[in-house]
View 1 (cartoon, rainbow, N blue to C red):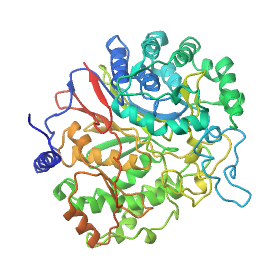
View 2: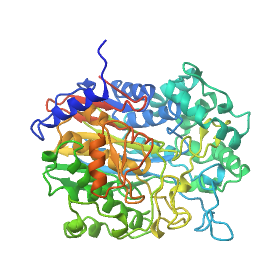
View 3: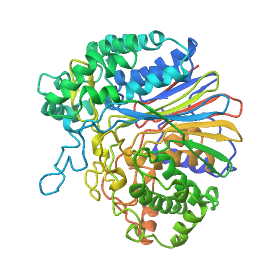
View 4: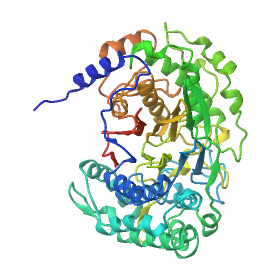
Length: 564
């Protein structure tokens, strides 16, 4: 049997990238004629696609997929977290929804500091004290109210059936559960559901979650944020030492926002606006790269890596300093994205040597944000598209699990700057703009994105990955547009990352030669040594010239494309 090695894949990438730039590559992923859902688990993607097939639209499928991920992928899929959605309707109109978690009313700037002003270890990352007010249910209900076609019963019944029937544990899921099992027990006690050891091939049933979903199906948003579930949830969090009250839950509302929209050459990119830093930071990266003939440098070549790294270095420095919840802080968006400002930022760039991050103004702060997010992309038979990234923040969030309600709670409070200048769990350094305040949304790197070309839908793309999300999404778009890769090849391609601080380039384990790394070191670049993790799990859809859809489902996970 023919074995596809890393060397083979690299050979094909190099050959593909020497073809005419901007000419559509032949598809290598799943191709469908009408509709597609790409998500972290096949069960969720299948339920979303089935909703479209029975007459629903992309927004109905969004509700179904999001809730199904809470069942099939509790690592990041959730009822107890939050997220962002960017959409493009078939008439070309676009928009965004912010259902990011919020700080509870009892929150204050120094809540995670001890009497000496030092950050209390794990207080913002583990257990009830780390939990922000969840936004996911409010988000999907807001989408359904505004754009949905099918009744909630038709959308959520298959999800409830999945929860009752159970989900088969994959090898990767078994490893993730095993890695967190001790922490589950530490936070919840040894009688909690996930104290049990689950092996590949086991079936996990979620009857408590099915009951919670049934209440939401019958009562909508109020079924979660008011009444019996809200009381049980608030009491549970407070019993465990947390801050969220019934009032916090009752006051939560998702927020419709204007997305970030910008051009890169002949692409129009629509991405998430603050409190996501994704859209603005990616806009800065792309606009700093735009004057260069990127395609001529070659895919993942030394010059491409240098140009991307130096653009990202400068953009992340601004990200850490200026960005936060726009309902609380004024963000100088026009200045940060102006041609004159970005030209000035790149004046110190040279292909001859690295720019030290210490020499780049703004920040003195490092980004740390969890990698354990999930993304899904949807295009329906009518041509509507949604790009959604949702998260609990860390793996299984705060590890706090409500056995009575059937879901994990987030540890999103760690994405605030607990103490400006001190990195969070993802190494990101925060500033005053992202300091804690009651009812404030914490800054995020989640970057759900939709791309148009020549006025037509071209790509739907996003990824988990914490602070690496922005660079992974940007590289995937460049892989298709500049380097002529198919959607699946663009997702498969090896990735790298730089985020200003720490001043290191991180490469995925395979796909970059030692000669390349040596050359970069000789130019003054510092590389992250040792075993590097994967960078993102991109789930994307490309619209082919004939109108068909090509999926890009990331094999770094159990991600799957489903369509018809």
